[in-house]
Length: 68
Image (tube, rainbow, N blue to C red; front, top):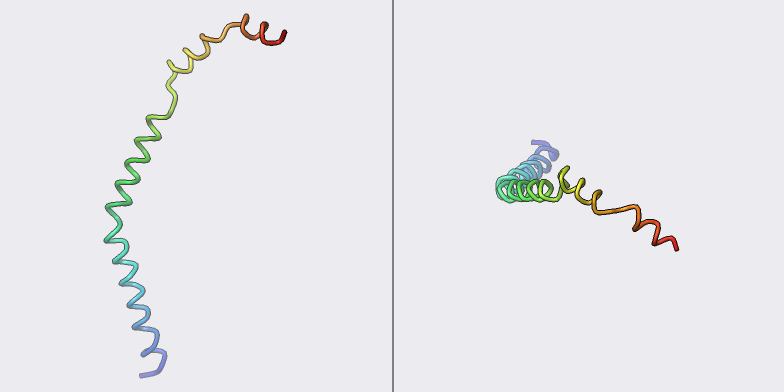
């Protein structure tokens, strides 16, 4: 065997096993986090009704009196 085979194949196998192990161990946590962040993003998006209500609350009188 050459020194390349004796040196780099075990290192490559260890790296591959480490990557696979990290994926296997943390994949459920990543999926839970993704679901949670998607639900938060859906909750924070303004609806059309909320935008209309905030636009109706402003009146032209408020804008004119603040300039004085």
